[in-house]
Image 1 (cartoon, rainbow, N blue to C red):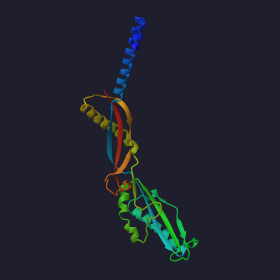
Image 2 (tube, one colour):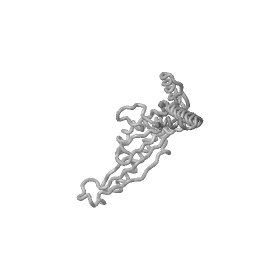
Image 3 (cartoon, rainbow, N blue to C red):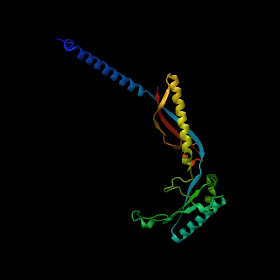
Length: 247
């Protein structure tokens, strides 16, 4: 006897109930799959926002060096050079109240027992002056006249933790830009999503997922070898990612 015969061999009421139950189960399962497929329909778009800004802080380490075999003479020379640097900065409009004199570094070649037979200068004295100014334009102009220090006998050095030297220009007001830029990036993302929905003949639903993105500061002139910190003008950029449901 096949299963169908066994099914209808029971009471007619039981068979009807069983058949209706199977039909309803199938409808619920199918409806669940349909809802699952519908909820999975979404579009992911990215919204870009950019601002051109100007640096509002300048940091300029000026490192200079003297050498000699007489420590007292070398010390006197570094003291003279420090006065020359301060005079140079004041002459070019930099407030020396914001200038910091960093630690003095003295090297003695004879103190290095691994050097072997010494030749040349015994003492090397290095001094660093750190300029911190809220007038980046003034600092930039002064940095372009640094040859005056060389003319006055100051030996500049680009070694050490400050790299090749020159001022670094910093934009410190990023937090003031963030709310408006996030708003613009989100609006641009929605415009892209609406265009996609129109092209695909669907309508845009609620936001399924959103990511604000990371703010980055780039040089305005984005060319090989151009450093963001070396430019007064910069570009602030954020890219937001948003997923919209499609209805």
